[in-house]
Length: 223
Length: 113
Ligand SMILES: Nc1nc2c(ncn2[C@@H]2O[C@H](COP(=O)(O)OP(=O)(O)OP(=O)(O)O)[C@@H](O)[C@H]2O)c(=O)[nH]1
Ligand SMILES: [Mg+2]
Ligand SMILES: [Zn+2]
Ligand SMILES: [Zn+2]
Image (tube, rainbow over all chains, first blue to last red; front, side, top):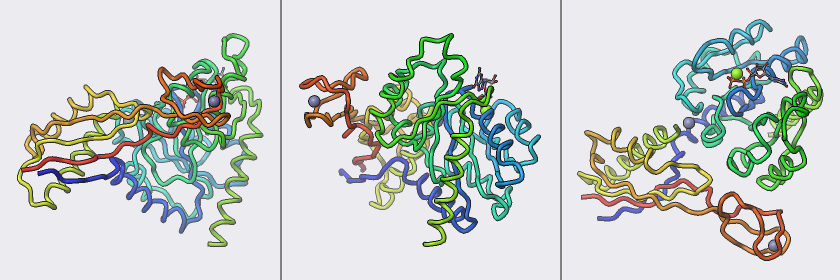
């Protein structure tokens, strides 16, 4: 006997993500899911963000670094609540893992919750975790054709941060080509050029994030 | 390796669907997977065989219907299949292409006894 199913494979995950989203709504958190290849600069971006918002905006971080707790230790230096997820798969965070971190955070004392996903360009984009938006980092050492090979992540993201632009002279990365490729996958994608080590362009990211948070607060107020 | 998580999701969904029908055994599963989901069929089949062991889906055949990436040219409106990441319109050579298919990941149907 044949039985029609027609169920999205991510259905169970999406249900948990929706429940987390309701918790974030109640606590007025802006939640950002940060994704990239391994080593593209996620933790460094979090460090710069912590510096810029110190004493102004209350941040919280969930990190999915599997190998070590180094990422969490780097963030803790900034006196920010951090939860290090330990039971993660090798390649992505899912809604269940993120939900398991929530009891360890006082969400009522957090304005922006940044989630550092596992370094991978494929599956993190498939698993919603209750975030308001996805932000992806592409470093110039990775190549400008990445958007064509990993369309899903570029489609799902609201913002693309092109990082390590201080290394541009040493690569054959074509900035115009990279941007054109990314916009092909997602014409609404915001794009900015940054170096998280020299600090170049960081102010663009900070004002983007601040604007996002303001929009979130306003939309929750009018809801 | 997202195949393991995907295999687990598939197993949960098909077992629930089969139990709802009062079925004793799942013999075949048809999965529709868009090319953008970057699924490696051998890995998925392998993972599924392993985790389905001892369940009512033990030994079930997993059929993958791979859906190619489809694009529509924003310049001239031509619809076409995107091969080898070549997002170029075959009619006008335009490069402004909207992805219109190949993003799904869905269980279509199952065969049960
Ligand atoms: N030159 C240069 N190096 C950078 C930049 N941003 C990060 N790096 C370096 O890249 C390496 C990885 O940076 P991380 O911030 O740890 O990257 P990540 O994405 O958190 O890495 P994983 O968590 O391991 O996936 C570090 O050695 C950084 O110093 C940049 O803008 N320019
Ligand atoms: Mg990191
Ligand atoms: Zn994965
Ligand atoms: Zn055309």
